[in-house]
Image (cartoon, rainbow, N blue to C red):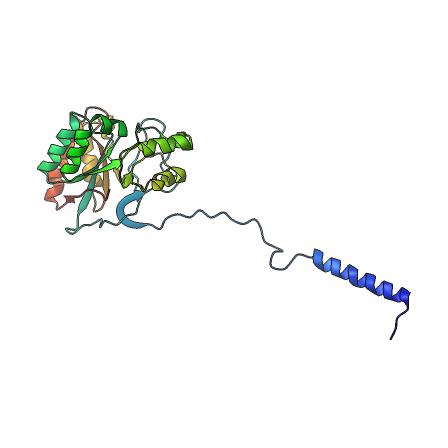
Length: 262
């Protein structure tokens, strides 16, 4: 049937209007969709001795090491936390090497047949390369603790890279003050260094007395635990005495002491 020209125009207009309405209608797949959620991807946790702290945790100590606690941290690595004997501790020492106290710590570790990991400052390593070489020769491992011990989360990206890159070469990196975030960890990773924190802070830098440092070590000891102490940054007589007492007791309990995979 042939429609008159006027009717044809009317039909065309109706069809065109219907098409416009359909195009303006939201698709059922997106009609109720909100903004796309931003998901933070974090590494899966297992239980080796290399500690990685998630962004936002333990990142803002108010002053030099003040307020640090021995909260548990997530572990990531390839060593066995319980070791062949079942009870392994990871002793770590920060801020050295130092001419007087590092040799005393090394002598004490030899006495107890213990291996440890030294997170050294680049400036101190440059001043005492013989001590770094001695640590390695005795079977201990060495980690990067930056060049000059700044709070990295307060620095520009360029300064963060400078501090980490000028530290000693290592597979491991420990941020000063435990101040870290995703960017700091990523910069360390760009230099093939895994971020290593700790499980037990002895607070020996406060010089609270030999008994308190020893108690912190003994109470925090458990298979796979990473224990933080210092061989640099000041007089470490209390640390040496406390560690001697603690290792005597822990060895009697069946503990052994290994270096981290740095």
